[in-house]
Image 1 (cartoon, rainbow, N blue to C red):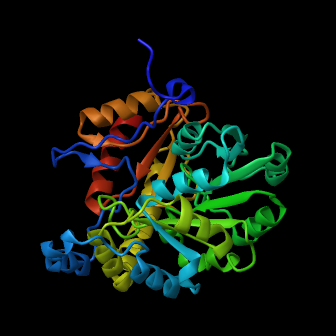
Image 2: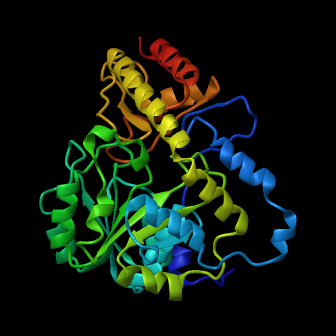
Amino acid sequence: MPGYERENIARMSGYTWGEQPRDGETLKLNTNENPYPASPEVQAALASFSVAELRRYPDPLANNLRDLLARKHGLTRDSFVVTNGGDEALRLALTTFVDPGDAFGMAEPSYSLYPVLAAVQDARVIKIPLRDDWSLPRDFAAQLNASDVRLACLVNPHAPSGILLAEDQIAELVSEFKGVLLLDEAYADFIDPSFRYDAHRLVRAFDNLLILRTFSKGYSLAGLRLGYLAGQESVIDPIVSKTRDSYNIDGISQALGAAAIEDVSYAEDTWSAVRNDRRMVRDELTDLGFDVPSSQANFLLASVPMDCRHSAASIYEELKRQGILVRYFAQDRLDDKLRITIGTPEENRDLVDALSVLVR
């Protein structure tokens, strides 16, 4: 029977999300969640939220949260739009800046939701392969411009490798690119502070830069769905005033997001713990023969040793049978690798112990 959906929707494939078991026993290292709970201040804010407040619509602009974000990043309220998770931010950028039939650009491999959202918008997807070390090709911006790309998304630190693109490289890319660059910083909270990385400083200099952040990873609020975009008012205002859904952020999310930011020192402690464990897990995986690039995210991309009797796919399946979930991608350049979320020290120990049996 013919369907009612648009032709491009009928042609496309949807997003495949990571497994989300609810048994309470599975060791879950597959979807890059923070292994530690959110701040006690978030718990207190939730406990004190009155159900009576739910009969009223929330602040349509989430201005209290925008003010807190402005203070955090040294910008103004009008530089921010708060979104229903980072994924809504991506969808809004595509809706606002890309006409059906226009070109959308991305590095390859990258976040697999990008081409799905582009297909929903009926945009042409321009995928530019990364180099062998997961760095951008030197002519990345030139390739985007040659294809008349209107919007490009670049995740930094890169997913799934965790490689960090330096601020000066971002500035060079944005200055050369003729479209809007959305810098997806979903994992930026886990960057080593010694890098002194802060791409928000570039917002004042470039009117074609959007920076995406999420509360899902760094603030342990993946179950809440809260994110934001930062940019100059010329790129933020069309989203705030035209393409964004009305009342897109509920009152509970606004209250809990504010509590998380106001207790950022608690979150910073979890980031530090993840960084320390990331270093130790990488060292142990390297000792087992895995090739693991240095990551600035809360995960590692581990290539299975060439002399291993098991493939990456079979290791993934065996770990799953043992109640340990990691992420396997059956696609070119990734099908010999596992992406491993950094967990608690105990979870990391269980994973490494299981892998040591499988690869030796």
